[in-house]
Image (tube, rainbow, N blue to C red):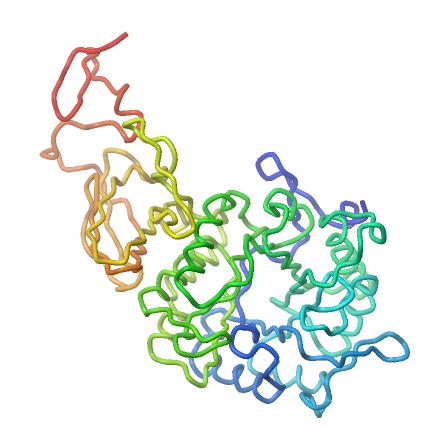
Length: 454
């Protein structure tokens, strides 16, 4: 395989994973599709870039801009090159890109792994290197820039003689060839948009920096819940240089967007929290001319962004209270009732994400040791990453009160051993409690010493 020769491959668990020097962290930027679909031009796009800078979003880490389809004419030139739509970009694409760069943003590329894009414009299949050269001549690329590569109008199998893997590998080879030709340190980050087909978490890490885990997002709670369910089975493939992409953000699209959304502020908080802590791309997808204070505060949550962009810990949070439990019951979920208990770690400390998946307010409790990164027998300071303040010290467990579809995003910091008056030390739940014993072999169950052994 050409890409294996061109790219460094590392072992990640039991699977090979691409590390070609870019895409260590999830991409942060703007994508035009959710806000405008085809109804944008260069001037409107630059206005979004200006507002990103004005609202502090560029400084927060959003550093690239994707014209998502609908930027070119339907037919290529006589030389086979794509032609920017002159009605949308009257001064040419290079000048547009140079204007974009002034706001601290690189220009990213969009195309499709087929004859046409999903909007019916020229796709890159069979012209991968040529289109990369064209994008380069337009000023696209640079730090943070990606190739978002869709999956429409794909050739018949008897033409490609390839599976999804082989067809997508072609663009990786072309990206590596272009980078080698121009000795460019900031080659394109490669992000597959194949809608979760054929379980990409099993194969996409070998040939890409990111892959979509789901179909196109919509600005409704049902869509967010379904993506959370899909993430609960694919989160393990995410790490530095390899990211499960949960699709663009719908934050800000309540009452607007394409289609018009109805997410509450609480649901938008949950949406952003999950995308950030599961180490997905963070791609703004709303018309910032209409941005509310809530929209900017959510998109600009620096504490969650810091974990999304953690340079030391690359793994996503993982669901707990899933499958077999300590009482030998099994907890299962579905697309309307996704996992609500998630945990993991960061270079700043252990992390919990607790989601109220019900349609009414509830109090939710959990044991600290349900997070593998928490040390049993110790207490922890708890920081609420939405309130942006420390909210107490947790000993063994914690309780949150959440409105419908709202979220708690908690960062823990070790505060030393538990107080002595806490009482008999149980084992970390759920299963170890059945085998924890005192030095004399007695068990402690429900705070009572009993003799029970094998």
